[in-house]
Length: 305
Image (tube, rainbow, N blue to C red; front, side, top):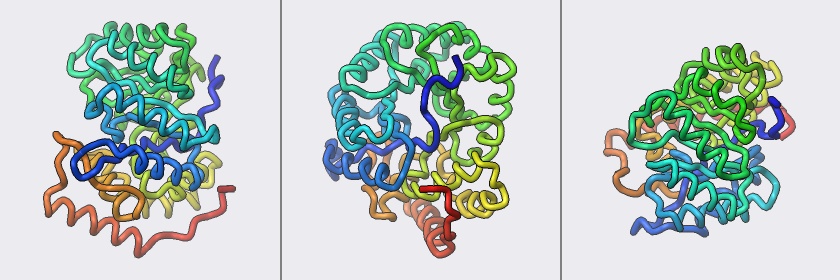
């Protein structure tokens, strides 16, 4: 069953664009997503952590799914994040995603509740069996507090719609442990920007990326170099990218990524409360990292982009 899904390459977790009054800016979100597709990304995640899923109303979630589908124009898969408090709410959002015509869903553990392992598995199973859409299970214990271990995921191997796993714990050993448990049953995705090269070496076939929102060509190039074993070419690019990639591992990753996107002229830095703008000092640090990156931006090896 492994590898049945054709999800490969870099899938930016796209930002949701807001106006200065924090209202949803659907046309700006459309522009941001269309530009990423033009730059050669392999897929799109909407309503993930970076997309501020939990700050959106149900109708806004539906809107960004429709916007992404339209902007993608069938050229790349669109996966919608499902992050809800209860399994029933998650099923409802998954059904909305189905109705919006997206290509799959990325399901997070139930929010707020610290679940036992069997409860975490039951939540994913409940969503995956309620809707006929491919499911990417999303593990991000630093942010969501519930750890989806390889053992938990192995119990979902019989669940046909669960096709992919996004690992954001930063522990790349998980890829090996999972393969030892269930072989290539799941398509594996790196979920943390600053461990992407190691993740690809250990079998990740995709990368849900934050910083590729600001540097999509660099992200896709780095991924393809790693995938093709071109490490001598990948390493200088990875080293150049790393100060930026570290921003994806911070608690304020959304503000950091949106600021970088803003510096690149791709989107706005506005986030919805409770996410507030970076302090002046933090903003200065991120802008300094961006300045250095742009001054030393490398020529990219040819990877067929």
